[in-house]
Image (cartoon, rainbow, N blue to C red; front, side, top):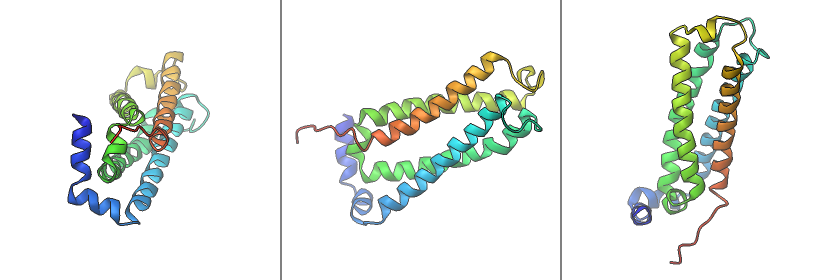
Length: 167
């Protein structure tokens, strides 16, 4: 069913425009990659703050206020550019296991980011008890950073994991 939808989408006028106007895909990919860099650097700065390696003069709330909006803005840009890329090459994207894995990991990362933001905004004792959060919090921060890196790797693999469905 997903294959049929992808083939249908590839034949739509908007998909045809994206496929046939030579500059659209490279321009959209460039913006997509820049937005990935914004997410990755923001997550890295939050992770470094949690580990006490950067931003020690700031509270976790101040760190979250500084970087979380960048994450959400970049994720909105990623959604728009991603939808454009999918529309331009739906068969390559939607049916690709690397893409599907990326989307599953992205869903987890969005939940984790939301939970982080909510706990910081509520002034949870986890963030205010000490300048350096407890080991489980640091482990979660490291796992989140690894998750975002895995999302980026899966995104790159979409281009290399090409499945032939025997047309």
